Image (cartoon, rainbow, N blue to C red; front, side, top):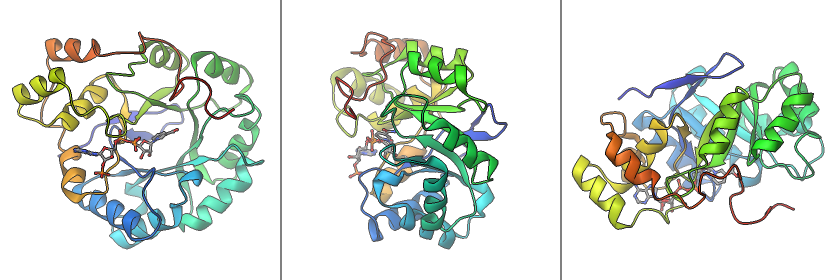
Length: 272
Ligand SMILES: NC(=O)c1ccc[n+]([C@@H]2O[C@H](COP(=O)([O-])OP(=O)(O)OC[C@H]3O[C@@H](n4cnc5c(N)ncnc54)[C@H](OP(=O)(O)O)[C@@H]3O)[C@@H](O)[C@H]2O)c1
């Protein structure tokens, strides 16, 4: 199984698929999940300062035998902190690695621009290859783009057929920002339902695989989370089939955001 990639504005290639480790306990649970994922062929791991499990992610990567340069490692600046560059150094220490592939502002707390000079300083200091954002809306991307010396490479957003933020993805593309899909399975809530069950049966795949495949076909890098080895393997097996136009249209019709440009992951700005 070969994971496809997309080129980012900083010149690096982001895998279209990876493992997310939100709500995975630091220690054995994170180490096992990351180990199983790398064994299955995953080459992108998504963690965050707020997840509290960077040390275990780093340990599993180091012990995997997979060369560091083959892995695309993302962490996120917790915007309750003050200086994104200083916090990147601390992340690298916890991760036990020399550099990040991608460093994101986790959410635009306090506005979309104040943390960016620290993010740029992290690139200049060689702490990370790329920088980006998460949970930014279309207007916040624009506001940041106007003042940035280094443009954001990625906006990580909640994205699934049920939260199909086509307007936001398009706004990103226009600004050279690749969207990445978080909570592609709705944190486990989107796996039931008749339309999805019908498409899963017709394609001979599982509901989770259909949701992941849909996001990949929309051009987004996708980062489902699981702590179970069988599901980690199942979620990876999405590069051997394609959803046809009718299936994609049926999934598109599940949208509850009505293609809004709103990138919030719940109603209201949950971080303010
Ligand atoms: N930037 C942000 O603000 C933000 C916000 C949310 C998430 N994220 C990132 O995106 C990642 C994924 O999002 P998420 O954690 O919200 O959830 P998700 O990937 O949408 O769904 C994960 C849930 O689905 C279950 N699951 C996974 N694969 C399955 C399968 N094949 N069959 C049945 N159930 C399955 C998991 O259970 P088990 O683990 O028990 O298998 C877990 O409960 C996060 O881990 C994080 O890295 C970022």
